[in-house]
Amino acid sequence: MSLLVAGIDEAGRGPLAGPVVAGAVILREDRAIPGLADSKSLSAAVRERLAGQIRAEAAAYGIGWADPAEIDVLDILQATLLAMRRAVLALALPAQRLLIDGNRAPSLAGLGPGLQARCIVRGDASVPLIGAASILAKTARDAYMERADALYPQYGFARHKGYPTAEHRRLLRRFGPCPLHRRSFAPVAAAAGEAR
Image (cartoon, rainbow, N blue to C red; front, side):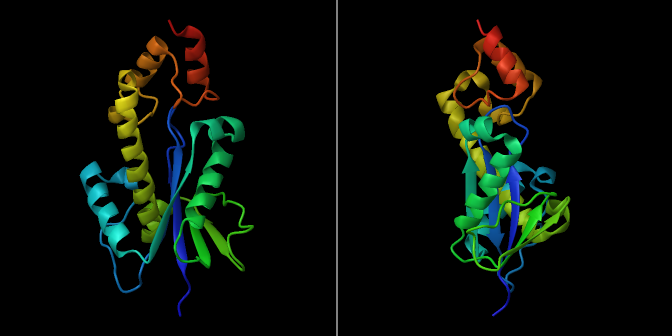
């Protein structure tokens, strides 16, 4: 039996609102999925198509979340690492090795005996397995923010997904933060004092 290797990546470190989401994917050796790449380099339609193919053909995949309250308590880096741990724990198969986008790995304690991790800067663009995780994380987070738009339509979450666009900053100043906003982020903290 070959080594079970999982690609790991996150989406949503930079937004002012919403969760940070991590994906973990173990692909089947006999089922290549053409077009896997950094999710940010793909159109929304291509990401959705690939996400469906990944979910259908992967040996295992998991999604992990850290919500805005956890981000505020832990900080965005620690919340990202927590989401990565949760994604690994959500895998239906136990990974033996992790390939992680970036330069920081979550704690491996309790994730499986002998588990190893390797960090790869810009791995989402160079390693298809990490690209697959990037796509799952991004599509899961985008879908969440589109649903959140129905709860908080005044912020335009379906359009900007919580990222600090000019539109989002203007609406944040106008309406003040909602429960999805990350209050530890400076623009949100400032808007909390400016809301009218």
